[in-house]
Image 1 (spheres, rainbow, N blue to C red):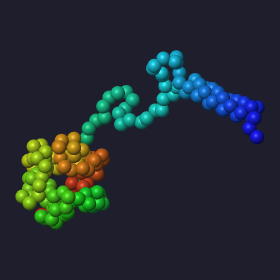
Image 2 (cartoon, helix red, strand yellow; image 1 turned 180 degrees about the horizontal axis):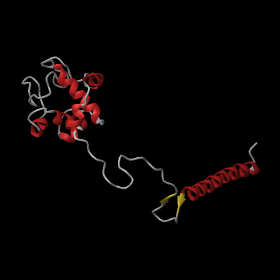
Image 3 (cartoon, rainbow, N blue to C red; image 1 turned 135 degrees about the vertical axis):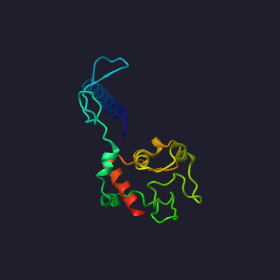
Amino acid sequence: MFDTMTMTKVLGGLCGTFLVYLLGAWVAEEIYHVGGHGDHHEQAYVIEVETDEPADGEPVEEVDFSVVMASASAADGEALWRNCRSCHALEAGQHGTGPALYGVVGREVAFYDDFNYSGALAAVAEVWTPENLNGFLENPRGWAPGTAMSYNGMRSVEDRANLIAYLDSLDD
């Protein structure tokens, strides 16, 4: 059944397959890389990605938060509350994973004695002003390094202002 000629054909088929694979790899390397065969290759093509900065290299002008806060909508902020309610409560003294947020705007940072705050917050600010809340909501770990809050942050300044306006509208 298996004679020398059959084994020669099988071995020739395997060698031929391996040769086609090597030639394909070489052709792909030539197509997708520009330049020599040294350690460093130039990219054959570049995919352009939009950035927030203008093409002329000038930085984007920062908007004053007080201007954004003046036009904030508490009704729009109520819809944004869903991101917070998994860890926080709006009832005074009722804590979740995070402290209660009733009356948070304008109160001391470590307000509740029955909640275990991380020391990182008290080291950064004393009072939750709208500006402090804006910085914290934008990037909690960047604003207060070492904070226990695991939220990644809210990128839109308008959304942050709306959420702060909503939280401010809850108390008297």
